[in-house]
Amino acid sequence: MKFGLFIPQGWKMDLVGIDPSQHWGVMAGLARRADANEDWASIWVYDHFHTVPVPTEEATHEAWTLMAAFAGVTGRVRLGQMCTCMSYRNPAYLAKVAATVDVVSEGRLEMGIGAGWYEHEWKAYGYGFPGAGERLARLDEGVQIFRQMWTEGTSTFSGKHWTTDGALCRPLPLQGTAQPGSKANNIPMWVAGGGEKVTLRIAAQYADYTNFGSGVPEDFQHKSEVLRQRCQDVGRDFSEITRTTNLDIVIGADEREIADRLAWLDDHMKGAGVPDAQRERRMEELRRSPGVGTAEQLVERLRELEGLGMRYLITYFFEAAYDTTGIAMFERDVMPELLDREEHGHLWHLRQEI
Image (cartoon, rainbow, N blue to C red; front, side):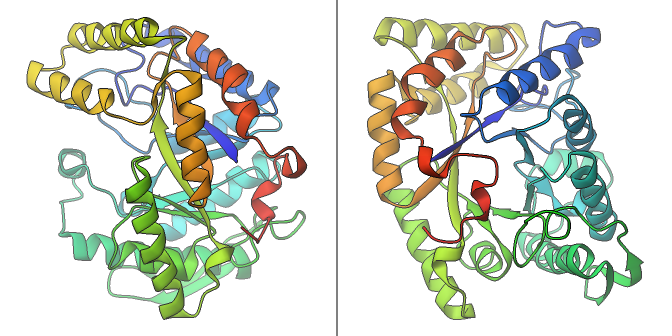
């Protein structure tokens, strides 16, 4: 199994109380921390503009600006977004941005992409909020433009939602040219989301990685079987796609420490002004999450997911900007039990067999 780490960027109100002048120092410090520990394969951010669970005036830093910034302060760890919303940026333009970040990072970029869902954010930025069918159709057309831009260096595409006419992508990404990369896409492409009719069909056609599920084994197993069927439908080898999931991690040495960490988060959200109904709902969801537990419990749950084909976990620690002891415990007591040392290293993503 491989592990990625979300860097707090404000979206989940995880920089509240820190002066904005210190935000980059906090984010860069955590990125460097992960970069220095080879057990972390990647670092990640979210592609959002407004906070959750409710929009506020608290900071949310923009994902692709952070990609370029992280490229400059790290040298090993891979860089991803979970996940970029296709309709927030023209796909030919985004492909060009991604290629530049791949060059700046010396071939360390992952492209996480999805259809988008945060209605308030869409409307606030003037994107409207088309129905799910249109958002998914835009995703489908956009990933085809990505592939043209990154592998051919140019794109001419006529779709219902996106068109290009000789758009140039020079230089090409380093991955797939000067360095090993995705066989089909050059830059590894993660199609995120578990929509069974459309999203997983798009993933079957174009993805190197999928990202779905809540960490509940039954859910992950079901989505995996749907993906397998979609691969059969489009003539794709199911084993070519690495299946991943995300988990919010709350780890403690015992139940008391776990309760203390949850209480801290509850107080933090209350202090950040999250309305009681949303805060209570979020805390109840978290208490039931498979990412909450002792090291032994987390290892057991992750081994079960691994047995179902989950090969890459992206972790999120709510308190990371304020307290790294939870991350340290996870690094010490969980990751060594699950890491595959024989396939260790930042080029693990090139492996084509599961």
